[in-house]
Image (cartoon, rainbow, N blue to C red; front, side, top):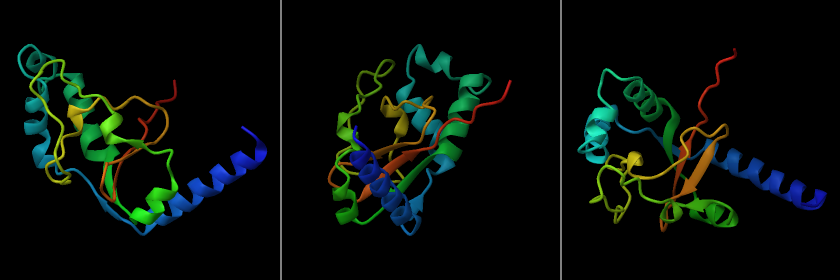
Length: 146
């Protein structure tokens, strides 16, 4: 990538991050966590994520602290064609083959566990929800110094 392209991309990301400061940010409702997990982890998957497992604790912390939904100006979002669309993220239907994509977006009903997001990424992930002014933002997992 040329320096000019890098500079333009950097300015675009800076402008995007600045514009989201004034945007409406919503966090998932913690009351939905168990229902969302149960919806995705059925059958043998239910044993994989029981409340007494480390995976359960990890997923709950992820849900409550690292995921947010940002409503922004659609015109500003249209400037960044580099955002991955939710429709491009595969479904996570290993334990529940009957899962289907949501037909619309409601922050109170959206189950992020239905999708194969890279929850272990070292950087912030941002996805645009097709046909809406919403973004899904997943903060990176905190790394513990060894």
